[in-house]
Image (cartoon, rainbow, N blue to C red):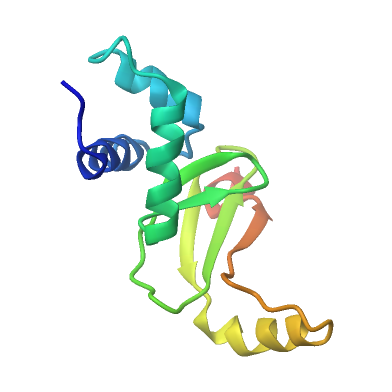
Length: 129
């Protein structure tokens, strides 16, 4: 029986929420294949594309992985702090950056459709150990 798109998206989001660290599409696929051996990568990619468009998940472009959205921000700027040591991702509301990011984009007549800021470094626990 083929599942509806919304149901599949919910399952993918549940897998993301069950993990502390970002997951690649193939890691999600591996998790879900346990219960559905015939599941294929395009199904996962479609679900992830919908989830990111809906703002329910974020794609970490720099590491090609995904995390669930953990903040409530309709017109905000997610700021994602990615620890290079343990891999945890913290999400912050960067709404205060929106005016400055818009001004930077306007300098080259660039019309931004979305803003996501990724910061790489060490989390507090890794920085002190």
